Structure formats: structure tokens, C-alpha cells
Image (cartoon, rainbow, N blue to C red):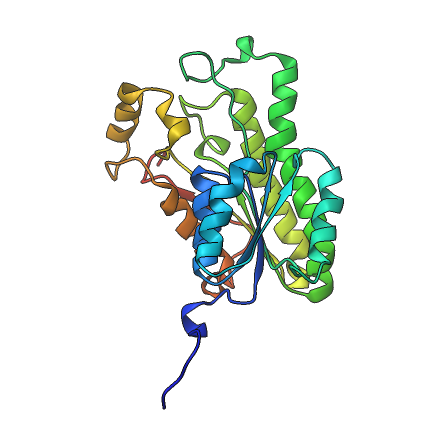
Amino acid sequence: MQTTGLRTDALPFLGKHAIVTGAGRGIGQEIALALAKQGADICIVDRSTSACQETVAKIQALGRVARIIGGDTSDAAIIDEIQSLASRDTFGPIDFLVNNAGISPKNIDGRKRMIWETDPAEWKHVVDVNLNGYFNTIRAVLPDMIQRKQGAIVNISSLAGSRYTPIAGSAYAVSKGAVEALTRQAAGEVAQHFIRVNGVAPGRIESAMSAVAGADFNEDIRKSTPLGRLGQPVDIAQAVVFLLSEHASFITGQTLVVSGGRGL
């Protein structure tokens, strides 16, 4: 029998609405596009709306709806902004949340800032963005997810959250370790409502940010990676798609390390 229109089997997220934070470039942008390619409509939450215009254009080119919330996730005011968006007929209830927005201050050589070099204000700022920002967005989406008895959340952590690395500073490592604890705790609390919460911990990913450390430094990391390469943003995006999908319907409270074997 001849059929017309979209093949819904090829678009498993068709009709779903996702929030991706920090999707103006790099990993966040790749995650947003990967979800859109699966059929999801996307809302980007980012401090800079102008930085997200390229991502929005690419999402729309895929035939999906794209929205932007301009704001700092570390500010609790973002909770009302997200809940207001979810109630609008122009978007819809949030099915997926991907927390990706984060910062990792470096010294002038693009290397980590040591504990004794870290200003207390910088420490607080890193924790506010990398941890409190995740709490705020999770807090925003959970009431509706609980009411509807459905939803899935993925928190982007880091290899630095569970082991020492020569790349990340202490503020970043501590914040990402706390994200993994938040992932486990939230998963346990909402499992009774059929909501899943998981994490992805990237290793060294090739990006504009990682390039700042220099080619020699990144080559050393590549050589120490068992699979012999740096990761690509798409590697993280595909892990996120899996964890949000029905293929991972019996997985919750886990943080999937995507590092090419680095840190084994």
C-alpha cells in the first residue's frame, strides 16, 4: 500500500518537545540538531540569544520548531521562563531536558586554573552555572513531567567529575562530580513517576574550546586515549539521543562515560 507524508518510524521523537541548554555551538548545538533530526521541536536556553541564531536556522531547516529563551540558567528566574514557555500553545509540554550549559575557566595558556590561583568569586560562579543551573532547569520541568507521568532528562557531566584529569580545574571537577550525584538522586526521586534521569560524561572533545590548549597538548591527550582519537560533538549527541530514547527505557540514574576509553 502506498503511503505519503512523514515516516514516523524514522522520526521517533516526532511530537516531542526538548530543551537543550547552551546550544549555541559545540556539543550543545550538536545535541539540539541530533534531537531535531529525530523529530523533536527544540527550545534553546542560552545567555546569548544572538549566539543561538545559527542553531535555530539549522533546526528550522530540518522542518522542526525552534525557540530561544535568553537567560542565565544559574538565575532562579529561569524556572518561571521555562514553565511559561511550556504552557504556550506555540511550543508545548517539555518531554526532554538536556543540561549542557557550563563553564571551565582557564589561565592565559588555555590550561586549568590551579586551586591556589582560583579566586573565590570564580569558584562560586563555576558552581552556580555548572551545578545550580542544572538544578534550576530540572526544577522547572519536573512538576509537569510528574503530572503527565513521562519525561527524560540527561545531564552533561565530564570525565573530570569522577576522576583526576590534567585538564580540568578543581571548581569544574567538583561541579561535575556534584552533577553526577544530582543525576543519581533525582533519578531515584522521580522513578516512581516514570521519569528517567541519566548523564553523559565526555572525555576530551575536539572543539574551539579544547583547541585553546594547543595542538601539542591535545596530541598528548589523543595518544593517551585507547581508541586513538579525540571525541567529536556528534559522539556526545548520539549518546544523549540513546539515553532519551525508548531504547534506554530501563536505564536511569547512570552516567555514561564517552571518552574513547580514556580514564579506564
